[in-house]
Image 1 (cartoon, rainbow, N blue to C red):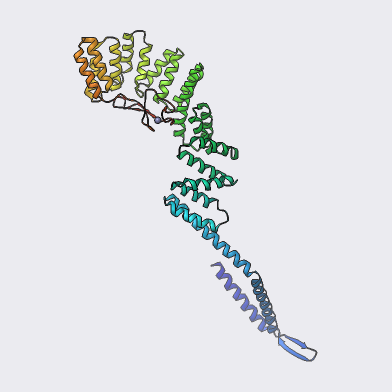
Image 2 (tube, rainbow, N blue to C red):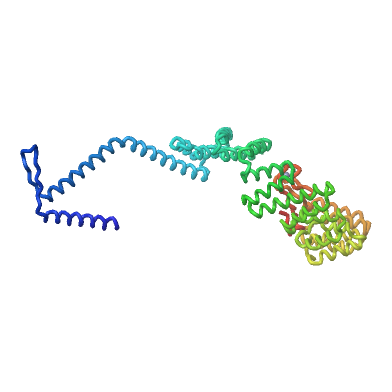
Length: 436
Ligand SMILES: [Zn+2]
């Protein structure tokens, strides 16, 4: 709109100037070779000079265009090529994220021929190759990127991920170490170093790297808490084994702070408190946690702290007061009652377990023991033992990575070495355990 107004104003000014000039009655005399004399009006003379200047200006521009034309044409061709390359690169990226790796690879290769900086095109090609299980080509391209100072993080990360996929952990450690010398402060590297330390069971070093990872905000709070709690339990065990009881308690408490009522953390704290003869504190922890962590190990610790079997039974009864309908409570009371020879109460709780339909092998075994010890009835004991063989197995710590059952929770699975993969596999008696 503004340009239209400006154009109208310019035309109007020109019209006014021409009209004014035609109104001026002056003349200009031109003498040519001292002989001929021309007389032209002043207005015509001014317009002729203006037109002459305009023609000269246009001619200069035309010659300038003729001289600079090839350069401009070349620049335009290059710009078109670059734009084409950028478009191909975008399409390759989209294809990669859509899972069409063959198309992504082909587009990235074409893009690389059209652009000067081929870093992104190479990365797309290598990632597409890796996704297509062509690890040899992927490693070659990532290797070249790793040698480029600007693209090194892309190259190293690709090489590490390939080695991780193949579970080639010595190779992971080697590339991480190499990468560390190139970019020592990279937050992602701290995460890899943390995982490496965990694989080597160096939990204290892993905890230090975890702090860097947390500060870099590359791990969400929930995951950081899960990893931190498991590391703290592992550290607590190591400290206890070295006789550093206070440090062991601190580590166990830290695990509970990170994951309140997490069963492995509660068990670890109770065990270390018992080991340091802080029995009252251990009992308080069990009483406070039983509602959410009804793990058999906890009531067994409570029983072990009682002065007599009868005292133990009373304490377990009190412990289970708030959860009278829970199978874990029935089993705890029955176990304590058998130890204290309170047969009726033991039988009542075990039968309640069976009636709930969630009885496991240990319930039937306890009933067998009861028949033998209370009534000396070997035949009835054998019947319960037979039923035990067909019963649901008792829960145990199961590694979610390799499915191996473990009696005790472990930070790293002793079979597959995966970290923090154990869950208390409930066969029905401890559904409310917060295992993970
Ligand atoms: Zn495992």
